[in-house]
Length: 415
Image (cartoon, rainbow, N blue to C red):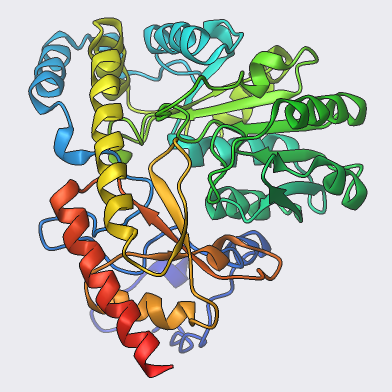
């Protein structure tokens, strides 16, 4: 060994230089700094002591209706049948039987046009946003973003170095002409056409066709987040952008978080054929694939008809909870917008009421409210609340609304 590595009890190795005290701020990458400019997804309040989300939390399924007996039976069966081959590295696209049942499901229920080879299983919708951003975006590329819009998608796009171009929403959805005027050369568009988050608008057919025509001419891609499309309580849904697309410009994103449980962390991308192999090559350098056991259990759950039956029950639960919430909110001085789709509504605040103050007062009463301005890039003319109703039944909703009413009355008395 080199002499400098030889030590004895009488001649200990030299003490390395003492570490410098840590600086006040960590030296983060430009990617991380860009992502941190986006509002965070996490709620103001943590879950309650029993782990359940607080009243009005967003993005929640009816967790009290999760099919525990069926799910646990399928997990046990799959665990017993797990072969040695399932313990090695798997297909980066995901478990093939799951991709097959997903392709069949979205073809039937959402008029999506795809084969299983176009389906890639990802870590929830958020994992899909991140992979697409890594695949398609260079630093500085302009990306249209609904405004107000989903901050999780915005954060993933910012992390890839995108220049976010806010595009406003009206009663027909994304205002395509304004997007073209602001960034005619945009590389990507993020849109929630079935149930715009957070305003709840459904994108009109005319706007859908206009967006697809522009994307075709501009050689841009459309990232279609089919958010909450499963929960429509009246009328027939419009065709997905992916189903209308004839130029392979749409990347479709779906998830099981809202129907089953967010902790499952299984979502999927449906890609244009030419993007499949490049994305899989990128994916192999990121997380390779999701755990196989959960994918196999979900594939069984869908193939045996449990998913369709559970979805029907969830629609009933959500419709009942929506009705209970709206009936209770009618007594409050909020201007309600509650489209018959999704798992949340919007309540516009009375003029002059300070939203942030209300938010913190409500948090003191155990309520997880969200301000519309949290999702907006450009200033909003009026503040509002985004109120979720997925995970609490009618009685719980009524009790939560009574607390909210007390907070609003106390703030009104102070003004």
